[in-house]
Image 1: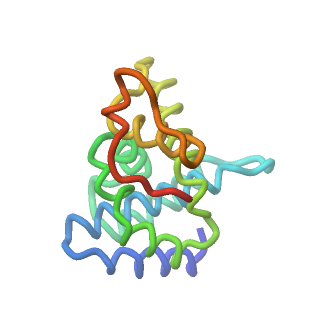
Image 2: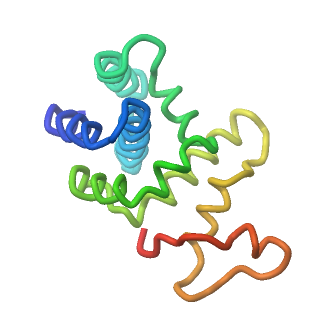
Length: 158
């Protein structure tokens, strides 16, 4: 991760309205940048990449935070206020143009797939529902007993 990307992530973080929101925004933005960086045909030295990300995370958030904890955060329900935040999405779009908003559901689903492979548990919950809503074609609505769970604000175009 280059210094320009690091600076952009720190600027995005400062747009949060509270310490908790800023930390969550940083985690999600950094995790999305990390996951997007994995989308390459090049061989990845995960130890080197993770070490670089972990160093940046440590200097930004302090002890106890790692790329692993960031990705774990991004696979749970606590990520929902961030991914549903228009302010976050706008800030992410402005500060991290290398990761298009349309790729966010795919990257989050990729992260859930890795979590499933590690835990053996099928992903479920509000993030899975959010990703499913983003996969629907514009104007298409879910049917059946889960339709009520899928009703709510949509962020078309993500």
